[in-house]
Image (cartoon, rainbow, N blue to C red; front, side, top):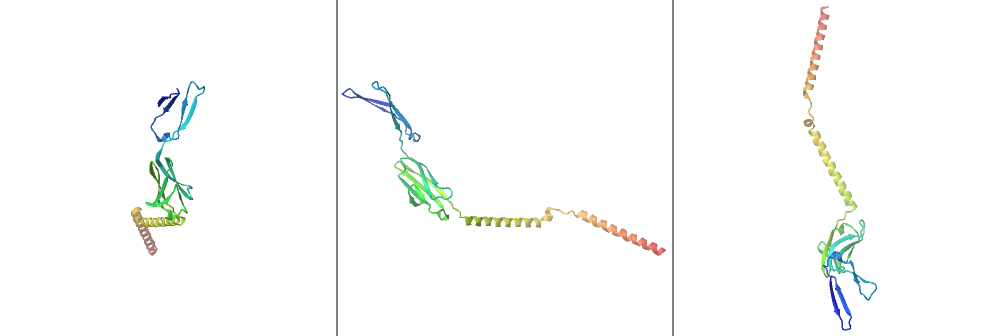
Length: 204
């Protein structure tokens, strides 16, 4: 803080006080008070003042007016003073002027990268928004395509399982052979018994 005093010929004195500081952005719009005290005044004199700090555009953000059915894209900028120029570009091509971009209808034709360049006498800054709109028909087509692909993969997997089933599930061949041998033995025993019965009949 700095104070200067000036004495005039008529005996009056002028006092000027300076409040010095670094002009930081976060101090913008902060309120300060100058309090004047004098023996000729019973009450203090309080003077209010709002700090006004200028800085270039910062934090440029593009916001649609509606999340589902946008009609306007707003270019929101933090700066002091307010930007004097807003320039919109689409895919690096000049597209529109102004702080809001009208959207006639959100469709795949509107897809692309949009950039808002905001500037004042202290500088400029950019903000971007990528628009990607899918129609309902294209969503359905992609869904059917995915379903067909899944069915095809499932069919291939099932075919591979049936083709190599014998290799994955071995069949016990030994037990079948033993069963076959047992059947042969029983058949031979029945034949021998028949022959013995026939022999006893002939002897009689």
